[in-house]
Length: 194
Ligand code: IMP
Ligand code: MG
Image (tube, rainbow, N blue to C red; front, side, top):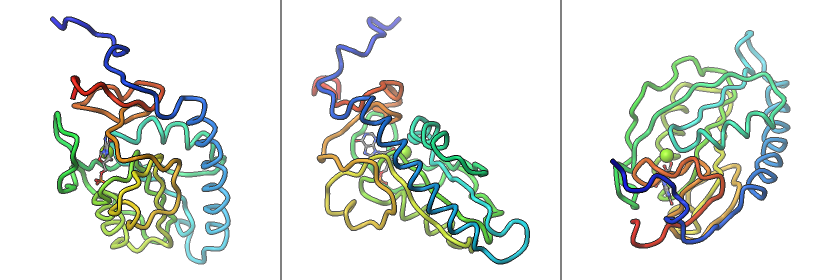
């Protein structure tokens, strides 16, 4: 039996609180939706050309994407994708590997890849490359967070919620060893927890 099931004692500090996250996600939703709509309306081709497809990367993006799509008043489809880079109790990303099938019906569509955080950039680079092979009409990337480290800054990304310092963060969908995704605020953990 676990000795404690609350998570308040594990938190060192709040980096970005839930209200700031919510406000920024609504702003991002409006911005991304306006750009996608403009593109979609000007796509020549058959009935599927111009469709908007969101590709959230599991599991970290679930909270972010749930809020983002409700701030995007557009017809869209969602195709989730699973990528593993962190396995278990680690705070350094390794090689990004695809852990599910790439959606196969993206030709001619406008794709928005959504992830929780841009760190080494391996995940976003891998997914963008695989999706490009399907010849969509456009591919955009959107992350809630970007760490201000050279690899992340050198990775092209179209929409970024917040730039954050190079610290390990949890909450707002992000985990440590699978836990803390349901913390509403973006937090750092006490060193003894890691
Ligand atoms: P990248 O491939 O190194 O850019 O890493 C992206 C993935 O690593 C994200 O989708 C997260 O799942 C995970 N990740 C990177 N930094 C953090 C962090 O500070 N906390 C929790 N997960 C992280
Ligand atoms: Mg992830």
